Image (cartoon, rainbow, N blue to C red; front, side, top):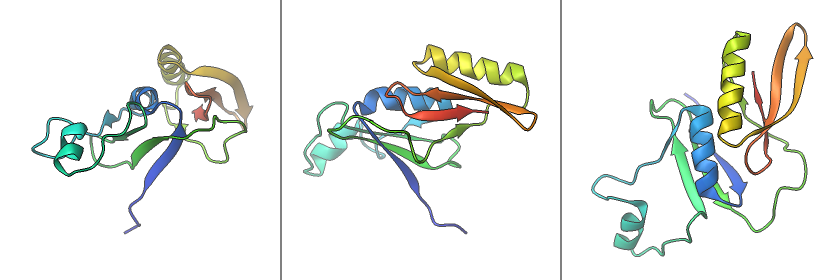
Length: 136
């Protein structure tokens, strides 16, 4: 069995990123622990300061298969190409890929370029904060 892990993404607005990547991956915002109506209630009950809105958020796979993705606000903006990126596997057909690309554009992504290689193609896109990812 592998080591459990989460993916952490630096951002400017965790709320925007949670909403976009939930759409992209079919994830949901992480619910608060049992017995709490919100994360704020959980934090207050445990004597933890509530962070400013949009500074932290997490999404999870509703089927509990994929890793948790945590978004954390950082002071600096993205300035260079990502060294790591996510590939959204939309399907083997052109229609499936184009449907996902359209859905992501409507959710705030932008197309950067189409790549055709070895008889396959994928679209390089950017999320609402400019982080590159691919739809294949």
